[in-house]
View 1: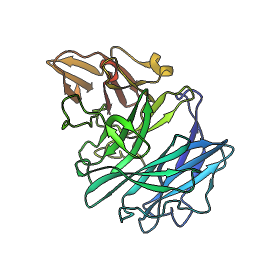
View 2: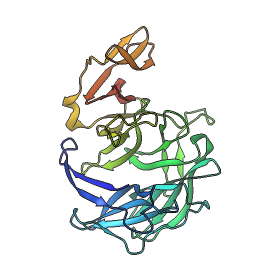
View 3: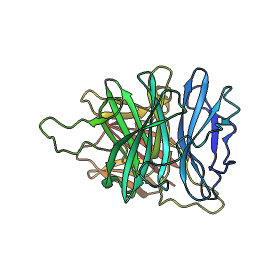
Length: 328
């Protein structure tokens, strides 16, 4: 696996540039490995790229690369910067997400051992040397490993977002709460201390492994992998997958977490789509008279639709629910 590289001024039109990261070092050139998912952050004019490096032995470690011009990328000579998973196994230890926090930096990493998924938390002052702070979340109900964790501020709250591989389709899970630099405490409804604080915003099958980027104006923007594990490569294809349209994270007037297309792309949405119909209490996505997906709704929902080549993205009732689905 490599890291591709594209640039955009508006997150809609993209220019493809040369590949950024190649699996060319002993710690990241495994036959079934390479330079796995991660994140990037800017500090003092330098862009730091954090990624999971997967060796020939299948060991997953966290590594660092950087660029000063946005075009030439150099791997850190001391890689891997986190060579050992504190849980005791490097087989499921991946997807570092780095963010600034109170003059320092934090990193969340997905992990798992003994059929129990976890999110691990690290701290750094310089983006190179990292101190393990502990498990931010551990829960076997999310599967044997948690992938692509993100922790980000939104208005006066913090949002924890991660991907669970336990169920089919695989799910992206959210929780809203507070973060003190070491612990994330999810909100629970008043008077219901034992209620489940985790929920989904996207309920379609083709939305996984989203990453959050902070725009210059402070917006938290979500871009996900448009894919599900049931999808097969068609004859003549080498790969199957795409990215979802960028979505802004927010809260509605009722305090519910929402995802809606970025402002720059709202003009592309349709209030009516030939692919979407509400009938007999069901919201259906249809293609060539075939129902691709359906969801029950007691009342007809408000739906905005983004149509693309072979896929549609639905934004329902102000973005409190989204549905991403391939139609062909």
